[in-house]
Image (cartoon, rainbow, N blue to C red; front, side, top):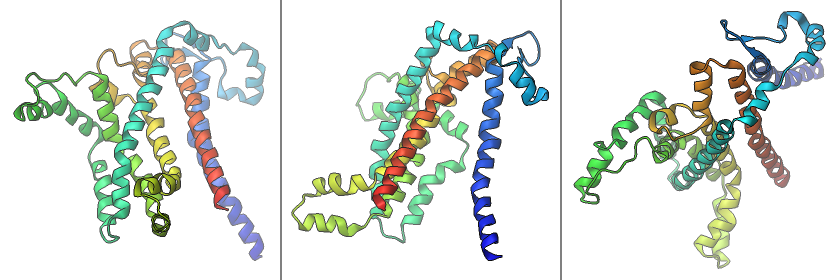
Length: 303
């Protein structure tokens, strides 16, 4: 009886995450994909579905030949979408790199702090989450505008004579993404560094290894799982970011999130925008699979 209960419990533990993915990932993805193979119509909602869920699997199978991928081929004809994808990946990649450069010293300092102080430092890192994300992004408008706090500070220190143009540029987008997603990078790094055995550094130094060399040969390799996790947590949402480029970026800031918004709300072209969202999701699957492979190899090395 005990073995039966244990087996049921183990199966339930496995089933729950798969059911969660089925409900909140695969089902919405299937709905978006269904819209992407539909045709535009003057209606509400503004598309004409090729198949209906009410038809069941038999009805879906019978209409496989009627599915149209014209919306996907349209994306290859218009360079706007390709440029938006490339620009989003580049901006997200640069922002992730900058976030890592800032977050690593913070996480390292937190991991080296006295144990009694570490919970307070973690709380300070997550403290910005207590304020609305939208309000925090809006605050950067007041900081970065020509007559804002940042330019006033630089002018008061006599570092500049005329205000810098920061707002409505890619620079403002980088600042907004780095600021907003910094905790997502710090926490995984802190988790990896905090678990590290400090005696390994002492052993390396006793063997004549300089501190910088010990960092690159011992500390950084052991923190790679945290680096990868933090980079994924920043890069993936940054690719599809809409609020930050819309509020802080200019008209020349091209990101796929803004393109999706325009297609859905301004052009009312739901099928094309659904195709854009589907391609974006497939692009983001690549770093997720890469992250899983890194984790699997790290676990194998640990064994």
